[in-house]
Image 1 (cartoon, rainbow, N blue to C red):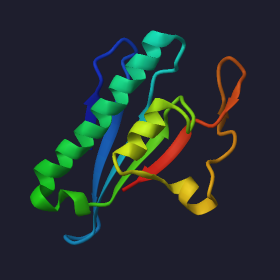
Image 2: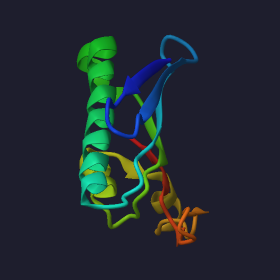
Image 3: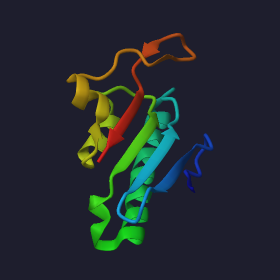
Image 4: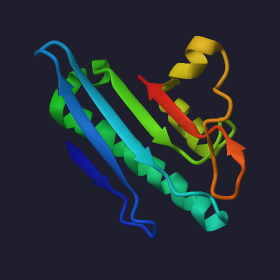
Length: 129
């Protein structure tokens, strides 16, 4: 397991696990919980967190797998504290990840949890590449 520390105000982190079923069957799985967007600063912070997370996953893949790094199946999951119209979602899908729920259902899930403010939101995602 590899820990990614964001070194920011909220002390948020991400976990990265390299699973090896055999020498030919290897996977990379990452999970995080991004900062809640209370204000514009938090929105910017979430952008930095997801950028750092995806970059760290890609760096790990390049280091471990060299020229074959794009062939390694990768799962990115977590509470992103933003919906499918949010910058974070668009950033992740722009980096060639697909939403597993959208690929199966043709839409994102409905409500995935209730915020501390009582709002029902869809902010939990499972992406793959």
